[in-house]
Image (tube, rainbow, N blue to C red; front, side):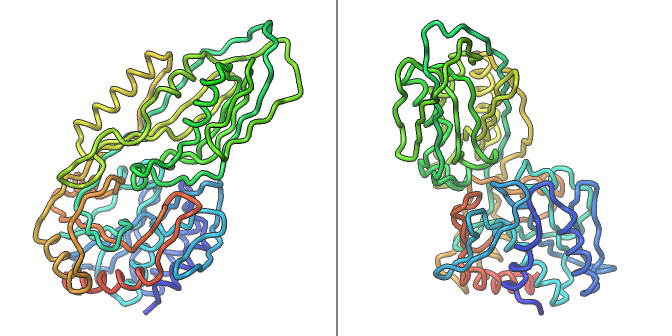
Length: 428
Protein backbone atom coordinates (compact mmCIF):
# COMPACT_ATOMS: atom_id res chain seq x y z
CA UNK A 1 0.00 0.00 0.00
CA UNK A 2 1.25 3.47 -0.89
CA UNK A 3 0.62 6.23 1.66
CA UNK A 4 -1.76 9.00 0.54
CA UNK A 5 0.34 11.82 2.02
CA UNK A 6 3.51 10.61 0.35
CA UNK A 7 1.74 10.25 -2.99
CA UNK A 8 0.38 13.80 -2.68
CA UNK A 9 3.90 15.10 -2.01
CA UNK A 10 5.07 13.32 -5.18
CA UNK A 11 2.22 14.79 -7.22
CA UNK A 12 2.99 18.30 -5.98
CA UNK A 13 6.40 18.07 -7.65
CA UNK A 14 4.86 17.24 -11.05
CA UNK A 15 3.96 20.18 -13.38
CA UNK A 16 0.14 20.15 -13.43
CA UNK A 17 -0.97 23.61 -14.53
CA UNK A 18 -3.98 23.45 -16.84
CA UNK A 19 -2.94 22.51 -20.40
CA UNK A 20 0.10 20.69 -18.97
CA UNK A 21 -0.33 16.94 -19.31
CA UNK A 22 2.74 14.95 -20.34
CA UNK A 23 4.58 14.63 -17.00
CA UNK A 24 1.46 13.55 -15.11
CA UNK A 25 0.46 11.08 -17.83
CA UNK A 26 3.93 9.53 -17.73
CA UNK A 27 3.71 9.27 -13.92
CA UNK A 28 0.33 7.51 -14.15
CA UNK A 29 1.57 5.09 -16.83
CA UNK A 30 4.49 4.03 -14.63
CA UNK A 31 2.32 3.79 -11.52
CA UNK A 32 -0.36 1.72 -13.30
CA UNK A 33 2.23 -0.63 -14.77
CA UNK A 34 3.65 -1.26 -11.29
CA UNK A 35 0.23 -2.31 -9.99
CA UNK A 36 -1.04 -4.07 -13.11
CA UNK A 37 -3.70 -1.66 -14.39
CA UNK A 38 -4.59 -0.80 -17.96
CA UNK A 39 -4.18 2.85 -18.95
CA UNK A 40 -6.56 4.37 -21.49
CA UNK A 41 -6.05 7.96 -22.70
CA UNK A 42 -8.39 9.90 -24.96
CA UNK A 43 -7.61 12.76 -27.33
CA UNK A 44 -8.12 15.48 -24.68
CA UNK A 45 -5.74 13.81 -22.19
CA UNK A 46 -8.26 12.21 -19.85
CA UNK A 47 -6.86 9.04 -18.26
CA UNK A 48 -8.80 5.92 -17.24
CA UNK A 49 -7.06 3.19 -15.23
CA UNK A 50 -8.79 -0.17 -14.74
CA UNK A 51 -8.08 -3.87 -14.39
CA UNK A 52 -8.12 -6.10 -17.45
CA UNK A 53 -11.60 -7.69 -17.57
CA UNK A 54 -12.73 -5.33 -14.81
CA UNK A 55 -16.08 -5.90 -13.10
CA UNK A 56 -16.01 -2.48 -11.47
CA UNK A 57 -19.18 -1.13 -9.84
CA UNK A 58 -17.55 2.09 -8.64
CA UNK A 59 -15.68 4.80 -10.53
CA UNK A 60 -13.46 7.17 -8.57
CA UNK A 61 -12.88 10.51 -10.31
CA UNK A 62 -10.65 13.55 -9.88
CA UNK A 63 -9.27 16.20 -12.22
CA UNK A 64 -5.49 16.40 -12.25
CA UNK A 65 -4.86 19.99 -13.36
CA UNK A 66 -4.38 22.81 -10.87
CA UNK A 67 -4.86 26.58 -10.95
CA UNK A 68 -1.49 28.26 -11.43
CA UNK A 69 -1.51 32.00 -10.79
CA UNK A 70 2.02 31.97 -12.21
CA UNK A 71 2.54 30.16 -15.53
CA UNK A 72 4.48 26.87 -15.44
CA UNK A 73 4.39 26.82 -11.65
CA UNK A 74 5.49 23.80 -9.64
CA UNK A 75 4.38 24.42 -6.02
CA UNK A 76 6.91 24.32 -3.20
CA UNK A 77 5.06 22.44 -0.46
CA UNK A 78 5.46 23.57 3.16
CA UNK A 79 3.83 22.38 6.40
CA UNK A 80 2.45 25.01 8.79
CA UNK A 81 0.45 24.29 11.97
CA UNK A 82 -1.10 21.06 10.73
CA UNK A 83 -1.73 22.24 7.16
CA UNK A 84 -0.02 21.78 3.83
CA UNK A 85 0.46 25.06 1.98
CA UNK A 86 2.69 26.25 -0.85
CA UNK A 87 5.32 28.93 -0.72
CA UNK A 88 3.90 32.04 -2.45
CA UNK A 89 1.63 30.05 -4.78
CA UNK A 90 -1.45 27.89 -5.07
CA UNK A 91 -0.98 24.40 -3.63
CA UNK A 92 -2.91 22.11 -5.97
CA UNK A 93 -4.66 20.18 -3.20
CA UNK A 94 -7.60 20.95 -5.50
CA UNK A 95 -7.62 18.24 -6.89
CA UNK A 96 -4.26 16.65 -6.08
CA UNK A 97 -5.62 15.10 -2.87
CA UNK A 98 -8.33 13.31 -4.84
CA UNK A 99 -5.72 11.96 -7.26
CA UNK A 100 -3.62 10.77 -4.31
CA UNK A 101 -6.62 8.91 -2.85
CA UNK A 102 -7.16 7.12 -6.15
CA UNK A 103 -3.53 6.14 -6.56
CA UNK A 104 -3.35 4.81 -3.01
CA UNK A 105 -6.41 2.63 -3.71
CA UNK A 106 -4.78 1.38 -6.92
CA UNK A 107 -1.75 0.35 -4.88
CA UNK A 108 -4.11 -1.84 -2.82
CA UNK A 109 -5.38 -3.57 -5.98
CA UNK A 110 -9.03 -2.50 -5.82
CA UNK A 111 -11.04 -3.38 -8.94
CA UNK A 112 -12.49 0.08 -9.58
CA UNK A 113 -12.41 2.48 -12.48
CA UNK A 114 -10.06 5.42 -11.83
CA UNK A 115 -10.82 8.44 -14.01
CA UNK A 116 -8.35 11.36 -14.03
CA UNK A 117 -9.76 14.26 -16.05
CA UNK A 118 -7.81 17.04 -17.74
CA UNK A 119 -8.18 20.83 -17.76
CA UNK A 120 -11.12 21.13 -15.36
CA UNK A 121 -9.93 24.50 -14.10
CA UNK A 122 -10.23 26.19 -17.50
CA UNK A 123 -13.75 25.13 -18.45
CA UNK A 124 -14.17 21.44 -17.54
CA UNK A 125 -12.64 20.61 -20.92
CA UNK A 126 -11.71 17.01 -20.17
CA UNK A 127 -15.12 16.11 -18.76
CA UNK A 128 -16.98 17.84 -21.59
CA UNK A 129 -14.99 16.02 -24.28
CA UNK A 130 -14.59 12.66 -22.51
CA UNK A 131 -14.38 9.75 -24.95
CA UNK A 132 -13.71 6.92 -22.47
CA UNK A 133 -16.39 4.34 -21.66
CA UNK A 134 -17.35 3.64 -18.05
CA UNK A 135 -19.05 0.43 -16.86
CA UNK A 136 -19.57 1.45 -13.23
CA UNK A 137 -23.02 2.10 -11.74
CA UNK A 138 -21.70 4.55 -9.14
CA UNK A 139 -19.22 7.43 -9.15
CA UNK A 140 -17.41 8.98 -6.22
CA UNK A 141 -16.03 12.38 -7.21
CA UNK A 142 -13.19 13.49 -4.90
CA UNK A 143 -13.17 17.22 -5.66
CA UNK A 144 -15.15 18.56 -2.68
CA UNK A 145 -13.45 20.85 -0.19
CA UNK A 146 -15.41 20.54 3.04
CA UNK A 147 -15.03 17.40 5.16
CA UNK A 148 -18.48 17.52 6.76
CA UNK A 149 -20.37 17.81 3.48
CA UNK A 150 -21.34 15.14 0.97
CA UNK A 151 -22.04 17.06 -2.19
CA UNK A 152 -25.01 15.90 -4.28
CA UNK A 153 -25.51 19.06 -6.38
CA UNK A 154 -23.58 22.05 -7.71
CA UNK A 155 -23.84 25.21 -9.77
CA UNK A 156 -23.60 25.31 -13.52
CA UNK A 157 -21.43 27.93 -15.16
CA UNK A 158 -20.55 29.86 -18.28
CA UNK A 159 -17.59 32.05 -19.26
CA UNK A 160 -18.32 35.37 -20.94
CA UNK A 161 -15.72 37.14 -23.13
CA UNK A 162 -16.06 40.78 -24.21
CA UNK A 163 -14.00 42.99 -26.53
CA UNK A 164 -14.23 46.74 -27.11
CA UNK A 165 -12.41 48.44 -30.01
CA UNK A 166 -13.35 52.02 -29.06
CA UNK A 167 -9.99 53.67 -28.58
CA UNK A 168 -8.78 56.85 -30.21
CA UNK A 169 -5.81 59.17 -30.27
CA UNK A 170 -6.65 62.60 -28.89
CA UNK A 171 -4.63 65.78 -28.39
CA UNK A 172 -3.70 66.41 -24.77
CA UNK A 173 -5.05 69.97 -24.91
CA UNK A 174 -5.99 69.90 -21.20
CA UNK A 175 -2.42 69.00 -20.16
CA UNK A 176 -3.58 65.91 -18.34
CA UNK A 177 -1.01 64.25 -16.08
CA UNK A 178 -0.18 60.57 -16.37
CA UNK A 179 -0.54 58.21 -13.41
CA UNK A 180 0.10 54.53 -12.78
CA UNK A 181 -2.42 52.88 -10.44
CA UNK A 182 -1.69 49.37 -9.18
CA UNK A 183 -3.09 47.03 -6.59
CA UNK A 184 -1.86 43.67 -5.29
CA UNK A 185 -1.74 41.49 -2.18
CA UNK A 186 -5.52 41.20 -2.05
CA UNK A 187 -6.98 38.02 -0.59
CA UNK A 188 -8.20 36.50 -3.84
CA UNK A 189 -10.03 33.20 -3.87
CA UNK A 190 -12.27 30.81 -5.78
CA UNK A 191 -15.07 32.53 -7.70
CA UNK A 192 -17.53 29.87 -6.56
CA UNK A 193 -16.41 28.83 -3.09
CA UNK A 194 -15.46 32.31 -1.84
CA UNK A 195 -17.71 34.63 -3.86
CA UNK A 196 -20.09 35.26 -0.93
CA UNK A 197 -17.30 36.53 1.34
CA UNK A 198 -17.18 40.03 -0.19
CA UNK A 199 -13.50 39.65 -1.05
CA UNK A 200 -12.19 42.85 -2.71
CA UNK A 201 -12.03 42.63 -6.51
CA UNK A 202 -8.92 44.38 -7.85
CA UNK A 203 -10.52 45.35 -11.18
CA UNK A 204 -13.51 46.98 -9.48
CA UNK A 205 -11.24 48.90 -7.09
CA UNK A 206 -9.11 50.28 -9.95
CA UNK A 207 -12.22 51.24 -11.94
CA UNK A 208 -13.61 53.12 -8.93
CA UNK A 209 -10.41 55.14 -8.58
CA UNK A 210 -10.43 56.04 -12.29
CA UNK A 211 -14.14 56.94 -12.34
CA UNK A 212 -13.94 59.14 -9.25
CA UNK A 213 -10.93 61.01 -10.68
CA UNK A 214 -12.83 61.56 -13.99
CA UNK A 215 -9.72 60.21 -15.67
CA UNK A 216 -9.01 58.82 -19.12
CA UNK A 217 -8.00 55.16 -19.47
CA UNK A 218 -4.84 54.43 -21.48
CA UNK A 219 -3.97 50.91 -20.38
CA UNK A 220 -5.21 48.29 -17.90
CA UNK A 221 -4.19 44.70 -17.18
CA UNK A 222 -5.17 42.47 -14.29
CA UNK A 223 -6.57 39.27 -12.86
CA UNK A 224 -5.06 35.81 -12.77
CA UNK A 225 -7.56 33.14 -13.89
CA UNK A 226 -11.18 33.23 -14.98
CA UNK A 227 -12.30 31.26 -11.91
CA UNK A 228 -10.30 33.38 -9.45
CA UNK A 229 -11.21 36.67 -7.78
CA UNK A 230 -8.61 39.13 -9.20
CA UNK A 231 -5.68 40.04 -6.95
CA UNK A 232 -3.25 42.08 -9.09
CA UNK A 233 -4.29 44.89 -11.44
CA UNK A 234 -2.37 47.80 -13.00
CA UNK A 235 -3.61 50.76 -15.07
CA UNK A 236 -2.19 53.85 -16.76
CA UNK A 237 -4.49 56.86 -16.79
CA UNK A 238 -4.48 60.54 -17.75
CA UNK A 239 -6.14 62.89 -15.31
CA UNK A 240 -6.51 66.54 -14.35
CA UNK A 241 -7.03 65.52 -10.73
CA UNK A 242 -4.75 63.15 -8.81
CA UNK A 243 -6.64 59.85 -8.31
CA UNK A 244 -7.35 58.76 -4.74
CA UNK A 245 -6.82 55.33 -3.21
CA UNK A 246 -9.88 53.09 -3.00
CA UNK A 247 -8.04 50.43 -0.96
CA UNK A 248 -5.10 50.47 1.43
CA UNK A 249 -3.10 48.18 -0.91
CA UNK A 250 -3.42 50.55 -3.85
CA UNK A 251 -0.30 52.38 -5.08
CA UNK A 252 -0.66 55.56 -7.16
CA UNK A 253 2.41 56.99 -8.86
CA UNK A 254 2.61 60.12 -10.99
CA UNK A 255 4.55 59.50 -14.21
CA UNK A 256 7.12 62.22 -14.88
CA UNK A 257 6.40 62.60 -18.56
CA UNK A 258 4.20 64.77 -20.74
CA UNK A 259 2.47 63.62 -23.88
CA UNK A 260 1.07 65.81 -26.65
CA UNK A 261 -1.24 63.01 -27.76
CA UNK A 262 -2.98 60.25 -25.82
CA UNK A 263 -4.36 56.89 -26.99
CA UNK A 264 -7.43 56.62 -24.77
CA UNK A 265 -10.25 54.10 -24.42
CA UNK A 266 -13.89 55.11 -24.38
CA UNK A 267 -15.17 56.52 -21.09
CA UNK A 268 -18.04 54.07 -21.41
CA UNK A 269 -15.66 51.22 -20.51
CA UNK A 270 -14.93 52.74 -17.12
CA UNK A 271 -18.64 53.50 -16.72
CA UNK A 272 -19.38 49.82 -17.28
CA UNK A 273 -16.68 48.54 -14.90
CA UNK A 274 -17.75 51.00 -12.23
CA UNK A 275 -21.47 50.21 -12.42
CA UNK A 276 -21.28 46.45 -13.03
CA UNK A 277 -22.83 44.47 -10.17
CA UNK A 278 -20.10 41.98 -9.35
CA UNK A 279 -20.46 39.03 -6.97
CA UNK A 280 -23.55 37.38 -5.48
CA UNK A 281 -26.84 38.00 -7.33
CA UNK A 282 -29.09 35.75 -5.23
CA UNK A 283 -29.27 33.08 -2.50
CA UNK A 284 -31.08 29.74 -2.41
CA UNK A 285 -32.60 29.68 1.08
CA UNK A 286 -33.64 26.01 0.83
CA UNK A 287 -30.15 24.78 -0.05
CA UNK A 288 -28.40 27.41 2.11
CA UNK A 289 -26.06 28.32 -0.74
CA UNK A 290 -25.45 31.12 -3.22
CA UNK A 291 -27.99 30.78 -6.03
CA UNK A 292 -26.44 32.95 -8.76
CA UNK A 293 -23.20 34.94 -9.03
CA UNK A 294 -20.81 36.50 -11.52
CA UNK A 295 -17.11 37.26 -11.20
CA UNK A 296 -15.38 40.05 -13.13
CA UNK A 297 -12.16 38.08 -13.46
CA UNK A 298 -9.73 39.30 -16.12
CA UNK A 299 -8.98 42.46 -18.08
CA UNK A 300 -6.26 43.41 -20.55
CA UNK A 301 -5.50 45.92 -23.28
CA UNK A 302 -3.89 45.06 -26.60
CA UNK A 303 -2.68 47.29 -29.46
CA UNK A 304 -6.24 47.95 -30.68
CA UNK A 305 -8.81 46.73 -28.13
CA UNK A 306 -9.65 45.93 -24.52
CA UNK A 307 -10.74 42.45 -23.34
CA UNK A 308 -12.78 41.54 -20.26
CA UNK A 309 -13.63 38.01 -19.05
CA UNK A 310 -16.31 36.91 -16.58
CA UNK A 311 -17.34 33.66 -14.90
CA UNK A 312 -21.07 33.31 -14.17
CA UNK A 313 -22.61 30.55 -12.05
CA UNK A 314 -26.08 29.45 -10.98
CA UNK A 315 -27.70 26.51 -9.21
CA UNK A 316 -30.52 26.63 -11.79
CA UNK A 317 -29.99 26.33 -15.53
CA UNK A 318 -32.71 28.84 -16.41
CA UNK A 319 -31.13 31.46 -14.13
CA UNK A 320 -27.71 30.69 -15.61
CA UNK A 321 -29.09 31.45 -19.07
CA UNK A 322 -30.70 34.61 -17.70
CA UNK A 323 -27.48 36.03 -16.24
CA UNK A 324 -25.59 35.08 -19.42
CA UNK A 325 -28.06 36.97 -21.64
CA UNK A 326 -28.37 39.90 -19.23
CA UNK A 327 -24.59 40.38 -19.03
CA UNK A 328 -24.15 40.03 -22.79
CA UNK A 329 -26.91 42.60 -23.44
CA UNK A 330 -25.39 45.07 -20.97
CA UNK A 331 -21.93 44.69 -22.52
CA UNK A 332 -23.30 45.21 -26.03
CA UNK A 333 -25.04 48.37 -24.87
CA UNK A 334 -21.63 49.65 -23.77
CA UNK A 335 -20.10 48.90 -27.17
CA UNK A 336 -18.59 45.46 -26.56
CA UNK A 337 -18.55 42.41 -28.83
CA UNK A 338 -19.50 39.33 -26.77
CA UNK A 339 -18.84 35.58 -26.95
CA UNK A 340 -19.49 32.78 -24.45
CA UNK A 341 -17.74 29.45 -23.86
CA UNK A 342 -17.00 26.79 -21.25
CA UNK A 343 -20.65 26.29 -20.40
CA UNK A 344 -21.60 23.40 -18.12
CA UNK A 345 -24.98 22.55 -16.56
CA UNK A 346 -26.04 22.70 -12.95
CA UNK A 347 -26.08 19.36 -11.13
CA UNK A 348 -29.56 19.04 -9.67
CA UNK A 349 -29.43 17.57 -6.13
CA UNK A 350 -30.32 13.88 -6.24
CA UNK A 351 -30.90 11.69 -3.17
CA UNK A 352 -30.68 7.99 -4.11
CA UNK A 353 -29.46 4.63 -2.81
CA UNK A 354 -25.81 5.57 -3.38
CA UNK A 355 -25.92 8.96 -1.69
CA UNK A 356 -27.86 7.45 1.23
CA UNK A 357 -25.24 4.72 1.61
CA UNK A 358 -22.38 7.23 1.47
CA UNK A 359 -24.11 9.34 4.14
CA UNK A 360 -24.64 6.28 6.39
CA UNK A 361 -20.96 5.32 6.12
CA UNK A 362 -19.87 8.91 6.67
CA UNK A 363 -21.97 9.26 9.84
CA UNK A 364 -20.15 6.35 11.49
CA UNK A 365 -17.04 8.53 11.28
CA UNK A 366 -18.56 12.01 11.51
CA UNK A 367 -21.93 12.63 13.18
CA UNK A 368 -22.24 16.10 11.64
CA UNK A 369 -22.01 14.83 8.04
CA UNK A 370 -24.83 15.94 5.75
CA UNK A 371 -25.93 15.98 2.12
CA UNK A 372 -25.50 19.42 0.54
CA UNK A 373 -25.11 21.40 -2.67
CA UNK A 374 -22.30 23.87 -3.44
CA UNK A 375 -21.97 26.96 -5.62
CA UNK A 376 -18.65 25.87 -7.10
CA UNK A 377 -18.74 23.91 -10.35
CA UNK A 378 -18.04 20.18 -10.33
CA UNK A 379 -17.72 17.82 -13.27
CA UNK A 380 -20.51 15.64 -11.86
CA UNK A 381 -23.28 17.37 -13.85
CA UNK A 382 -21.48 16.57 -17.09
CA UNK A 383 -20.98 12.92 -16.13
CA UNK A 384 -24.67 12.70 -15.21
CA UNK A 385 -25.53 13.91 -18.72
CA UNK A 386 -23.09 11.50 -20.39
CA UNK A 387 -23.91 8.49 -18.20
CA UNK A 388 -27.52 8.94 -16.97
CA UNK A 389 -27.51 5.61 -15.14
CA UNK A 390 -24.61 6.55 -12.85
CA UNK A 391 -25.39 7.61 -9.27
CA UNK A 392 -22.90 10.25 -8.06
CA UNK A 393 -21.68 11.78 -4.81
CA UNK A 394 -18.70 14.05 -4.11
CA UNK A 395 -16.54 14.22 -0.99
CA UNK A 396 -13.14 15.57 0.03
CA UNK A 397 -11.01 16.90 2.90
CA UNK A 398 -10.96 20.42 4.32
CA UNK A 399 -9.33 22.65 1.69
CA UNK A 400 -9.34 26.39 2.31
CA UNK A 401 -8.97 29.29 -0.16
CA UNK A 402 -8.43 27.23 -3.34
CA UNK A 403 -7.20 29.13 -6.43
CA UNK A 404 -5.24 31.56 -4.24
CA UNK A 405 -1.84 31.86 -2.57
CA UNK A 406 -3.64 31.20 0.73
CA UNK A 407 -4.73 27.71 -0.35
CA UNK A 408 -4.15 25.10 2.35
CA UNK A 409 -5.36 21.60 3.23
CA UNK A 410 -5.76 20.16 6.72
CA UNK A 411 -3.42 17.16 7.03
CA UNK A 412 -5.53 15.24 9.58
CA UNK A 413 -8.60 15.80 7.41
CA UNK A 414 -6.82 14.12 4.47
CA UNK A 415 -6.35 10.99 6.60
CA UNK A 416 -9.86 11.01 8.06
CA UNK A 417 -11.55 11.30 4.67
CA UNK A 418 -9.35 8.58 3.17
CA UNK A 419 -10.65 6.12 5.77
CA UNK A 420 -14.19 7.00 4.66
CA UNK A 421 -13.26 6.64 0.99
CA UNK A 422 -11.87 3.16 1.64
CA UNK A 423 -15.01 2.11 3.48
CA UNK A 424 -17.16 3.34 0.59
CA UNK A 425 -14.97 1.42 -1.86
CA UNK A 426 -15.20 -1.73 0.25
CA UNK A 427 -19.00 -1.42 0.30
CA UNK A 428 -19.32 -1.10 -3.48
